[in-house]
Length: 154
View 1: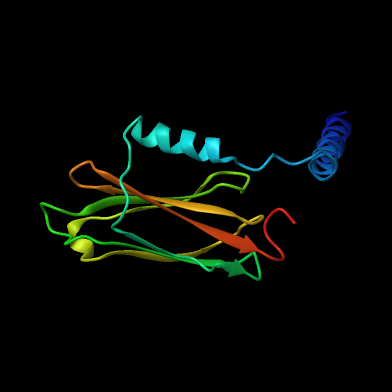
View 2: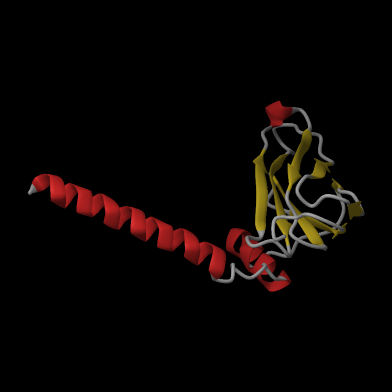
């Protein structure tokens, strides 16, 4: 009797897993993030604090021929001393399923506030970068990337 119950449970689990996989394929995916969702994600981190402009160099391609591997370089102007340094950098994408792409934490020991990575972009969209300084001030920059093929949304 136990063998039949175990076999029945395994079959039921496989059937449910198959249905769940089919649902992911058939049902529409999550909608892309909007500029309002990016603003909400930033507000969740920093409240109503208004970021200034400048200090951030966001290097992304103007046109990404392959949205699956879009290079991104972020550098923030700072002396990186104990008294004045970059605490964090957050990168958001206004058209991806989730707005938060990556976050970096820095300390004065880093010597330079620089980071590079690659990201997936589902479509043409703005990339927003926020830098938080040790004194609590914020800086923001934005750059549009035009995605021609690929992407994480197809």
